[in-house]
Image 1: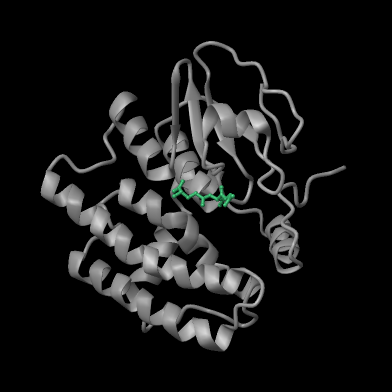
Image 2 (image 1 turned 135 degrees about the vertical axis):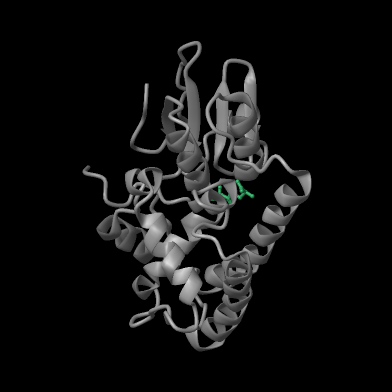
Length: 242
Ligand SMILES: N[C@@H](CCC(=O)N[C@@H](CS)C(=O)NCC(=O)O)C(=O)O
């Protein structure tokens, strides 16, 4: 089974079929999207159960993730939460080409770039939530992004991972996709493709990766979601028909 509308407090734990991997999600969560990208890219079949993060089901906190965050996955007796941990597990357990570099030093370098990227994400959230002032945040966000631009320039590759997208690309993409649509939050915002030459070229390439196309953020619904957050009451079902 797959739910669309999110489940909240008082709901029943949805019964499962053996052998079907379940993704616990919230339709607009960028961390969930990291895992969706890997599931899609590796062609791993899965079902989705959406969680109302404003009113979490008791069973979710008791059985799946005591921290109450999405994503989490459940596959028979396996329960894992946190996008990076889940993605590493999926990459090592499921067949197909590996998304994490074989060389431990290269794999560590990739994770360091995701760490550098996470400083951009921190600034992004300062403006995403009510009260964030763009004039304070945007300059800091852009200078954090300068460091990412430098990393990509130094690598001199099409994707962060090389000739094709790797785990590093999928772990960075969800928030970068939002940055490329940042004028939803900051009217008129556009990434300067001189200052961010390598990053903007990478964005162009990533939008054409099949897993990214398949999980593309639905812009109209995302706008409704952003507005609900700005109004102080996040609507996890934003854009769904009644
Ligand atoms: N480090 C976690 C972060 C996940 C996260 O922050 N998810 C948000 C939704 S985008 C969440 O579940 N928020 C619920 C809450 O904070 O209570 C990961 O990478 O999975």
